[in-house]
Image (cartoon, rainbow, N blue to C red):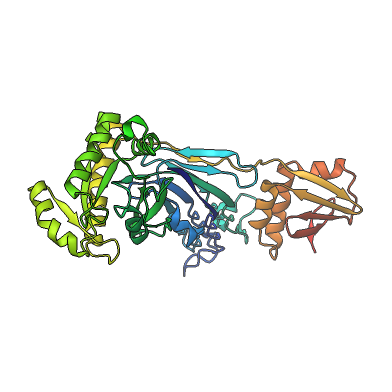
Length: 432
């Protein structure tokens, strides 16, 4: 019952908004200064642990998670608005790994815990930021920084929320197949289910739970008869049980006796199992004998709520699923209260890429690799001469120009950063 659910997703933070080039233009202010505003921050992609989901099934249909871009800056020193973060909901116990190395990046264990997996880019500076005593009319602004992008691998252990218990051939496998996409082996003989089958039951687009069809239980299971110990070990890991009774008496057994015997075996193995919340499912009501038994079985349970269903026709299934999910949520609330999740949970940030650069020398060509220089180039308007001067200063501040000189660069050699190429000059860099 500890199957693993996995998903691989692509996450991209939003690009920051561009800075604005603007000058104050008013009737009595003929030489108004620069007033271009900054661009807004791009949204980040953030994983958040929430209640109500137990699997990664939704990522099979939506593996791309992309945040919005920040708005561009405007004149009159109006900054662009920051974009909203994209919150991606994941179940408790989600492990985030690097898909290349399989290294664990973060293990998300508590409701409310967050992990920023792709940061949004910062907004570009408007031309008002570049004004100085010697640079009165800057006609330059930065482009927004591209958001981070990466693939990550997600993994969550599928520990069943709800276990199906009952005698062999009680209809548990049919119920699992009816309520989920699981395809258990179904046949008319004892011990049809030899190992737990897991299925994801979708309540709606954002709510689901894991249902397990556990090997059938017989008298003497607590002593190891049949598949007894294997069965009971699996039951211990569930939060609640659906006790499926063959109301149609297909094997000639009495439904009430079956119910009592199963609970006796649970108690003899571990009294705690009898304290697990149970919903009683009266299965096979589509059979003629079930109608004869139904009144007597309902009378046995008295005021206790029972759920008459047919795993074959689907009758009563929706009502059962809604009741199961409602009870499961109450159980999860109690569990969370015991774990004292009221305290604020820290937000984990995947470390930024190494800011150091790598210099690769080829004949008359020098290739610079690194996140810092790449970001500087992408935020530069290559059609703007003043912007190129600012880029030259950034590369010098990073130590790249000194590294090029030490590597033996000469006038006219080519420098490549990301997809951009420059012709090296001792005085300035000219774009090709």
